[in-house]
Amino acid sequence: MKYLFIIILMNSYGLCAIAEKVFLEANKALIAENYNDAIDKYESILNNGYESTELYYNLGNAYYRAEYIGKSIWAYSNALEISPRNSDISHNLSIANTRIVDRIEMPKSFIFITIYRYIKSIMTTNEWILFGSFLIFIKSIHFSGMKLGLYLVKMYKMTSTVLISLIMIVHIFAMDSYIDKQRKNSAIVISNNVNAYSGPFYGDNSKLFQINEGIKVNISNQQEDWTEIILIDGKKGWIPSETIWLVK
Image (cartoon, rainbow, N blue to C red; front, side, top):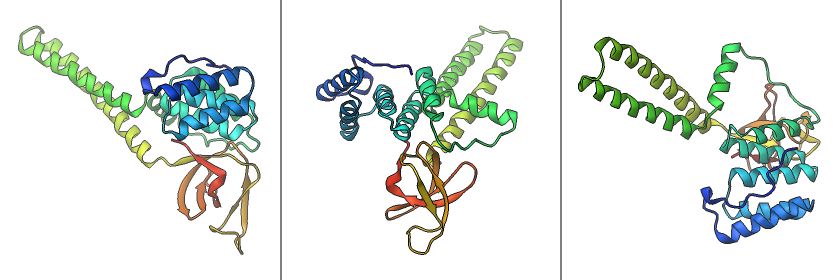
């Protein structure tokens, strides 16, 4: 496992002095292998409304070492949502995923769909939007240069076509990423031997299947203390809401 044990500052997320102090204390507890103490401190920061890549990452490390595999996958998944290109997070998440008892393999997609999804995952929604805005800014400068006679007409048309194509492609990724984020409602199972039932209560409902911690599920419905989930293989059932944690 790779570790980012000591993060001196978390100024990018504006943590207040008290939260920063608790974060550093949690890091020391993590280094000293007092994992439950570190977990309590990291969770107290989250409970106060603060979050960051480093916080989720270190919390994931503490969960993993304390043998809370499902919770570690939840923490790493949240960290990766914030920093999708962080190789340390991806590495640790992949290791944690190997500890899942009943892993469900994602159905194979067409190669171009796989490539499209990979490219889309390289940046966050906000980064795609910023990149698209930057390209529009470049296009405006490019157009101004043409008006000032800085380009030959033939060269302008060629470069303009390239820029417009890039702007369209980037905005497609940005729009798709935004829509996907809005409709995304996923969670991680944090308990073992969780039974999924045909209805949102025990009673006479039949048990459909059983899942263990670490499995990622999509949420389709909620009713009181029950949540209807869908697995990536299409199975659907109701489980107690306390057995899953939502991914941010």
